[in-house]
Image (cartoon, rainbow, N blue to C red):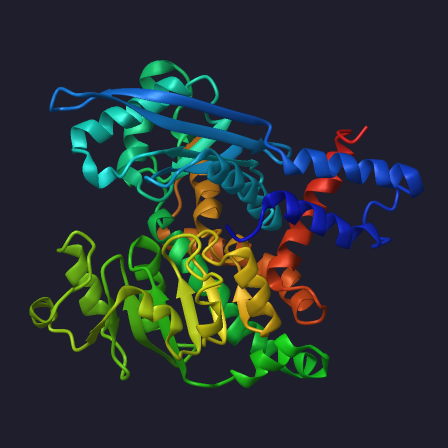
Length: 459
């Protein structure tokens, strides 16, 4: 993971302690006592729930599958966080991700708390009927702690609108006569989902990059030049430069990032490499993203893996090993796959000048420190991939009002919401000594601390 969440809270509070504008009501010993309380509250989850889902398989075997739901903090609103189906899920990971959800919602001023769920399975190993039963069992086992005003799950790795539809239907059957549309987000449109939700994370990731490299840079070029800041100098050097881009991951997030970059009218982008779980495809002149998206839609989400499949897709590309993408000589690297992709063993070989985290925690803590010392511009997950939870909030609101927005309305609201956050954290990043990730954490912890104090939680 990027960094232990306890360390994130401690380091953010250390940075805030000397800031006289932060909780000025608290002084001396009273201030130290309050900050110790904040450390304790934000470093630990409110609740950790674990169960074993008893599942009869179609072959007659009965298995028990570990499942988790972690509720970190709800000071800002109902708990909110995805449910992932993956064989690497474990309790510590789910706790860490729930904490990061609290921080993500705080930095983007979304009125939700942080939660996360997980089931230790590889969904590819189960038939649809079995996956449906897993979803139903998950809701049954945790039905007392989830709900529209308690804890609102959403899709994550290994889950999609299909699983959310199944789970919402089960919640409805368990709680007849109660409000149910807001019990899950990321649902299909016909089941109360929001237009734009499926593409929201990818669009938000690309927008975080485009806003920095185009809007912010053009609006603040003179100011950036006046700052004695190496990150600012790196950004200025990229102004009006043709950008070679590599994208790790070509699923729901990575393919949307690729589509947005491919069609962008503001920057001169050239996507020279993409990868998935099997392969990297490279073309120095740029890949045809439209053809590749069309191919994956008819090939279970997989990119062409050999020359025969490339020919079938009518794609010109060089086939390379999957992990080679990370160390290519590119200007921009989007990470939209799994955690811990850049680590101590490959961090010396990362050549990209800008790294954007579409996945959760794709850079380990040690690698993050190393890359920041090299003055790589890193747009972190907490900032970049919040599109999903922001549009989940819009979906939740639409479900309460039963009034639904058009896709353009959703996208415009998403960009406006993210822009407000960028307008706070980008100027700080390019004018102080903290990384952008640290600036986001500090902003989030400050917001949570003030609300905790105002609600009398620090006494």
